[in-house]
Image (cartoon, rainbow, N blue to C red):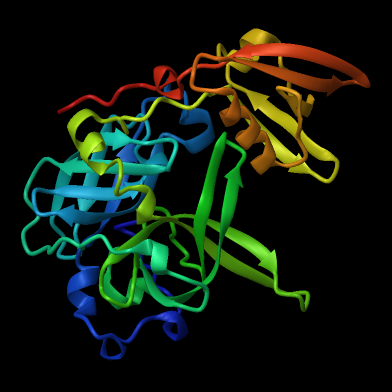
Length: 325
């Protein structure tokens, strides 16, 4: 992203004069991030081996917050500031439950002021925010919160209180979501589409709120883990369809693979709980217990009903550990 010549449409760009804080200084805390991932990494096939996005300085000692999928299993990370300075970074932590990633800069990036963490719990639909990548106002979007609601992802992920903003930032991954007090209230994760009721498509950004980070940040810095018991992981990507949810793919060697789950299997129940959508599926799996517990599952395959028991695992045990350079 750092080398591309792109900018947000002028109509969406924030005007620094409209804000009661130093917007330019706040935007300087956002850097471009590029990560290189080994070809044999578990996530290489789904997320690629070259990933680009943004990261936000949150500590004067060179600690950057980003979205975790950018640096998951990364071997090399480069951080580029708006002034052109480039340093290498190290993936200090990736929390797959919240989706956050922490990167420690391995060199100095002078002139950057960290963004303080704000109170994302107070952010409500209609509130104004700035969603920003590296590059100042030209690469930032003056947006508003459109919703606070759960979000479930096909990769065994659920966020109970996600932030949705519009207009959408065109380079959303790892962007800073800045509140009107100049503090960081979230990190951009995805772009989604929904209808606006008039037959037109509305693009939204899904933002992970910093309220999910605050309780676990000290443990992430100290140990690289959240300190919470790991959630049960099954190792499958799941699609939500009109008739329910079905398996899209299965990770080789993961619990679902070992139990005999196959692509196109329709998931009917988890531990006796009927499943109708992604959110219900992941909530039912989490309700069984922590990683390592058996997860009874009823499936439909080619018109037949199957009962399988998956011995769940800790997702982290299937990922490559980043090397410290």
